Amino acid sequence: MKMKKALALTMSATMAMGIAMPVMAADPTVTAPIYSFEVLDVVVPTTYEVAFNPEGLTVKTGDSTTSTDQIISRNYGMINKGNKDQVMAVALKVEDQNTGDNKVTFVDSEDEVDNAKAGEYKIHLTAIAADTTEVTVGSPTPASADENTAATDLNSVTMNKAADTTAVTLKDGDNKLAFKLDKAVYSPKSGSELELGATGSNSNNVASNFEITSLAAAGKGITAFTFGGSMNNVDTNWSKLTAGIKITATYSNEIASSNTSAVSGTGAMIKVGPQVIADTSGLITISGLTADQNWKSMTVTNENGTFDINSGDVEWDNSQWSEEAGGTLKVQLKESWLGTLRGKNGSTTVTLTDDNTISAPLAIPAS
Image (cartoon, rainbow, N blue to C red; front, side):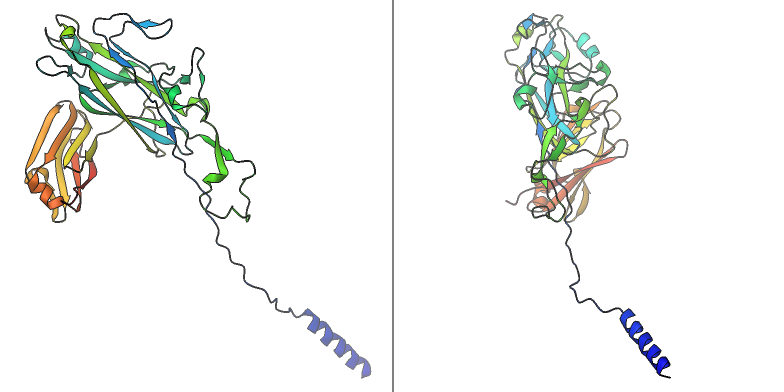
């Protein structure tokens, strides 16, 4: 009996030792950062140099180079120094500064130049993109661009022209080109590498931890374009024109979508569809219209609903547009429209002949 009692006491002690004891500790909680950053940094030229040369005069273009082209231009580069693939848009406004009877007409083709009548002044002005070979910078020995390439280096770059079939015709007024450039390479700064849980590594925006170390490989972070075209020079006295052609370039950029691709034969140029913008005076401009994507109809939306553009008083300007070829179409809203839009958020929507639509906000300030 004493042995049984001792065995029972031993088993009881063993069972007691096997029971888990609760751990008294705080529950762990973490607010985990979402590491990311966005740098949309682009570099564009600071100057343009262009000349119109209808008579094919010899023009010096460098220390040992000349040109007799009818439209002479430097090559203008652009660089993506951001950490995202970007679309670079170049808005080109072309304006003839001549007035009176002797004025320039910008036409759609070289054939129209060749068939110009005596006394007419016709220019087929084009923008020509770089082809798929790498655009280089510097002289007299051009080299690959890098993260230190400056804006002034892009005023005159070395490029090979893409085929004439990819050239974009520029008309009087507003025109637009666009190019897709691959992202630059960013690397951690020495001593500022991200470290899990470390002080300074617990914020979302970690841009300050990184720095650019190179442009996209294989020249995909740089591209360029130039101006070209032709002018008529038969039975026309260009010396009667006393003023030149004004070209104004405005650059903008945005993150490229994943399905953005270059036009075949070019290094980076992408197709630009029709665009619509509305300024604060109520001037609506529809640009980039083509024979396949031309203007069909337009509506204006205000707080009362959506209405056809001609429901109110408007003034159309179709001097840069045709039903056959498209171009740029402008419409100025008059007071019957403006009175319903002042101080309110509105919009305008254009339906194209292929039934696609393009829209823009329409914000008229309060009086």
